[in-house]
Length: 278
Image 1 (cartoon, rainbow, N blue to C red):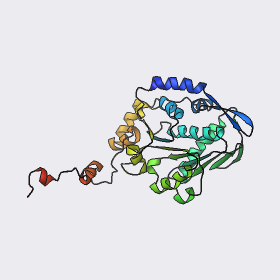
Image 2: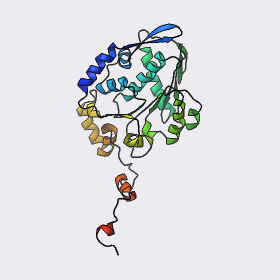
Image 3: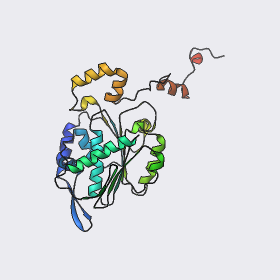
Image 4: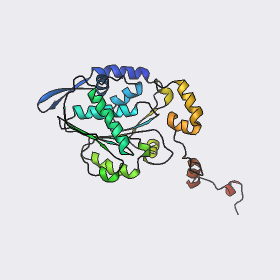
């Protein structure tokens, strides 16, 4: 999904979402559930147009192909915390290639909670990697290990940070945790070559809502900074980090499009194309 030309629609969605309140019941107490956009405002955030669209969406599978510092991790943290506070007994799993990265996303969740003036529920237990709220909901950060992920079930939202760098085995291990809840799967990343689960999902995955945010579309990143980064990093790295382009990994001898053409049945061998068939 491109964000070009969506600002006007996003502003309208923002106004409508901020007015929306959903009444839910938890432990016989009435809890007023704000929309995710309104909740972001309660956390002290002012969402960009693409974030408004993402937070308003009800898509069960979302893929964010976003540049560095675009706010994708903060957006995912809002989604996880919104789920936990207003959906009793929910389970949010946060995954990434390493435990350090997962814990960073978890810290964003806790920081958002601490920024609320009047949290709808309190905290029962909290550690460096998990939190449990008084409504029975949990948010848990996990390392990028297939073995530690298999022990969880009935997740209502799974967020995979730096998804382009997560091993395919981890994806296969965590997806069944959503089987009985019809929960949401959210993958966010900058590109990391034309291979792996995230690349294949972005190119041809079925049922995914895709959101692409380049650095030039982020109001917090200046043109001056980007020009400096282009000079320092070079076009190859810059295109991946800031333009959301899936580049051939530097170790490849042949470009991926040449390999695909070579394996295609439609490819005509060079000797035949030159009329050299015997």
